[in-house]
Structures are given as structure tokens and as C-alpha cells.
Length: 107
Image 1 (cartoon, helix red, strand yellow):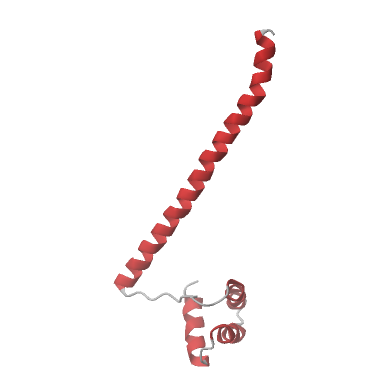
Image 2: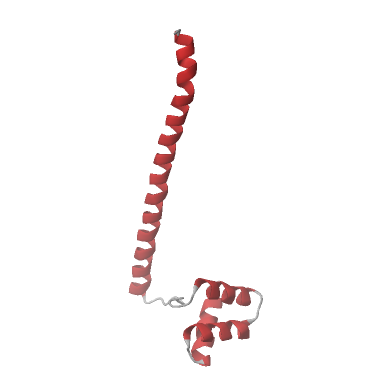
């Protein structure tokens, strides 16, 4: 077998190995970036808490409902947003109105 034929057969294997190594490296970077973002978010939460800044939290609200509330706020349908919030949390109308106003002000 000549060396030229051997090299021609080796090139596709080398390309596949290089691509696999690149994918493995990228997967590690994506994972570490996600962990870094989580650390930054935790630190930011601590800073906000230390400074006494309250953020309109969305705890306990399903993501789909929260997205619909945001759509209502963006299209100036606050009463519908308040209704959705009350249905999701069971809070009073006054509590819902206050939360919605805080969320709208954060945009």
C-alpha cells in the first residue's frame, strides 16, 4: 500500500476525530458558561437583598402563565394580567395589582 493511499484514507478519520474533540470542548464550555451564569445570578440576588432592593418575583407562577402576563402588559391589558396573576397565585386583587405594577415598572 502506498503512502499516498494511506494518507487519503487517514484524512477522513482525522477530520472526524478533530470534530469530535471540538464538540467535546464546546460542550464543556457551554456547561461551564451555564454554571457561571447561575453563580452570577446568585451573587446578584445577594447584592439586591443586601441593598434592600425588592424585585417582583415570579415564584410559584407557571412559565406559560408568566409569559401570558407579560404579553398582556406589553399590549396594555393590565386587568387581564391581574386576573391571570390572581388565578395563578390566589392573591387578592390589591396584591395582584401591586405585583403587576411592579412588574410593569421593571420593563
